[in-house]
Length: 561
Image (cartoon, rainbow, N blue to C red):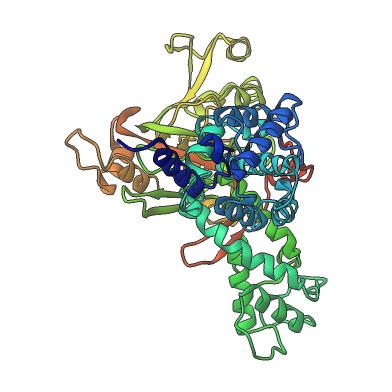
């Protein structure tokens, strides 16, 4: 048997090693043990956090709208213990997070939204600070971390506020649980933060260009490129060659060095390269539009990159298949293979800037229709078709239209068709064939906008640099190639080569529907800044004004809608 004195001595040694203070009363044979010093401090901080929660003041260094209940729930789950303080000092995780907040500008975010500098200052003076000050720091860092994670994950603005058909709520984190279980005790904070951001290569590439353009903007735009009274063609006299060369070299469109006395040679090639990067016809001519783009402030290009990053964060992140992406202001479609490599890309035509814009939304391509009917949408029916029918009785036949009743049965056009169409008694469709407005194929992802991908008889429009000509749907330049790609994994025993798809379009059965074995996600994007795989950065016009509306919301600061 061990003596009572021996056991108490052993307990004393263990507690002393853990940091407990001790008071010894030898005459009584008793050891009275007080709580560890850091435990007492932690308890005092917890008391302050409870008081702050009761007053609704957790994270009081920033506007807590939308986060107050989340912060309270988080601290309740840890019995109001501090998350970011240990031994009167910020934890290693806290230090890392504060630095991430301070450098959040490189993510297209605003460090002021997180009080990054204020937190950095507070963290330096935690030792010796009151329990109230330490509690305030802890809660403020929790709020900032919540906001930062949310901004990286789903963006700052809810896209539904801008009437975009994208749901970000489905990919929201349970922030209290995510922070307590994955962030506050993480051995590698960066790996946790990396998993928050969009997995898309397009996002990563444009994010990587932001620092480059921030550095360029910090140096200034330099001298303006002079305009001219008329378009300057290669070989023409032009007084602004030195300013033009300086701007092209600044932007990386012209190699450094050399002198340029005339508008010719390498200078023209530099302009062509610039034009190709900015969605312009790469003809080497210095017209008003090219000069305007050349003189666009670099700060505006930075803003375009910021806007692109924000919109990428709205996109879904989990798919059964790699998605098809359509970027509206770029007038471009990209499709990805099963190993997430770029499989094909092509030009598209999108909705007119007004009044028939292509909507921004996500969906799944479910089936393809070869040699489709075109069911005339109500808007086009009212604006164009009905007035022409009322004016010309032969219009229906000349356009190869069919009038149908509510059951889809074709009816005689001898009736008062215009009146029937106005009342909704009749509908109208165009027969399949080469002159059909949809062309010879459509790619269907049923949606409330009645928008889909399709071919077109008006192929000459794909050669234009600006291609917003449709009534909202998206016309694709190489439909047989897209069909072959989407049907590559079919289980119907048919080898859907490009030539087979083309034959089905040219001479196959009218209105033939082929259901995809596996649905393919389609993302209709709107980003005016794109970084290619070779690092080239492209900028495009804000044709629908979406960037302008987004920036008007962002400039107000949090709380964002």
